[in-house]
Length: 218
Ligand SMILES: NC(=O)c1ccc[n+]([C@@H]2O[C@H](COP(=O)([O-])OP(=O)(O)OC[C@H]3O[C@@H](n4cnc5c(N)ncnc54)[C@H](OP(=O)(O)O)[C@@H]3O)[C@@H](O)[C@H]2O)c1
Image (tube, rainbow, N blue to C red; front, side, top):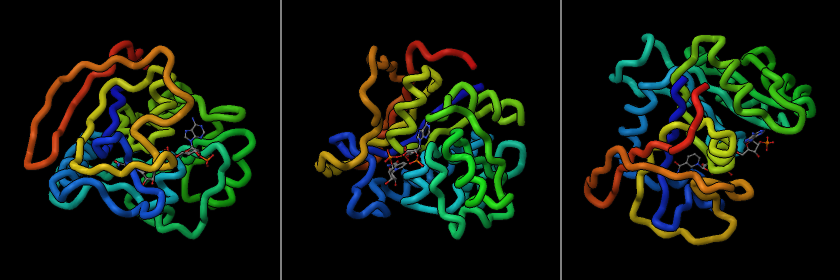
C-alpha cells in the first residue's frame, strides 16, 4: 500500500480560510497538478470537514488517464457520522463511496449514506487508520491519496501511515488561529521528519514532494 497526501498551503501553513472555505489557495496549475496526482490513486480519502466545505465527489478530470480505467473511489472519515444525506457527493454514479466511522457514528452515517456507500465501523471513538487501510486493501485499493484536511493528515501521521506528501506552497498569508493548517491534531510527538524528493518553482508557487521518514509499510 502506498499512502500519499496532496494539499496546498499558504506561507503560514494554513489550508483554508474558515470565513471563505471555498476560496482556493492554488492557481489553475495547482488544480491541474491535483488532477494528475488523483489519477495515480485508487482511492481518495478525506475528513468530514473537507466534505462539509465542498460536498461533491473528488474526481480525475476529463482527458487524464485513470489507474484501472475508472474514477478513484472516495472515502470520507467521520467519527460523528454527521453527514448530510442531500449532498451531491452521494449521487455520482461513477464513484464508489466509503464512509469510515465509529461505533457512535454508525447509525447516523448509515442514515446519511442510504445504501449509496459502504459504511465501515473502524473504531470505538475514532477511526483507526490501520484498520481503514486494511479495509481498502481488501477491496484492492492500494494507492491511497489523502486529500486532507489537516485533522485527517495528523491522524495518518500519528499512525505512521503516511509515506509521501505533495505540498504546494502558495504565495498567501492567511493568519487566523482558527484557520486549519496542514497538520492539525494535538501535535506530533515525536515530530515527523521529511526528506525532499523533488521541488520546483512555477511562477509564484513552489511544488514539493516529500518522503515521510519512519512511516511503516501497510
Ligand atoms: N488547501 C488544501 O489543499 C485543502 C485540502 C483539503 C481540505 N482543505 C480545507 O480544509 C478544511 C477542513 O480541514 P480540517 O482540518 O478542519 O478537517 P478535516 O480533516 O477535513 O476533517 C476533520 C473531521 O474528519 C473526521 N476525522 C478525521 N480523522 C478522523 C479519525 N481518525 N477518526 C474519526 N473521525 C476523523 C472528524 O469528523 P466528524 O466531525 O464527523 O466527527 C473530524 O471532525 C476545509 O475548509 C477544506 O476546504 C484544504
